[in-house]
Image 1: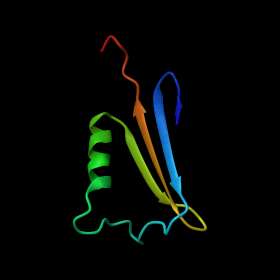
Image 2: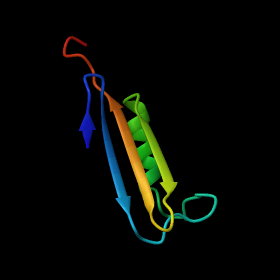
Image 3: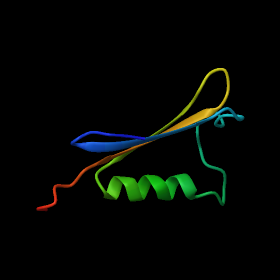
Image 4: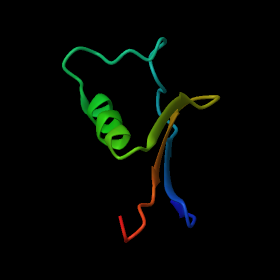
Length: 69
């Protein structure tokens, strides 16, 4: 996790099987979809990618809202 004056970024990485080709979620699995919807509602972004030679990485960036907002 790292932060700046403008945003906070969280990066999670594992060394598991990685993501399925095409990155399509399996039926009945909505966790990443819901995460993306919530982060985007806060004007943030989500990045999900395979990591070589195996595993996956999830990055979440959220902008910081000024206290006066």
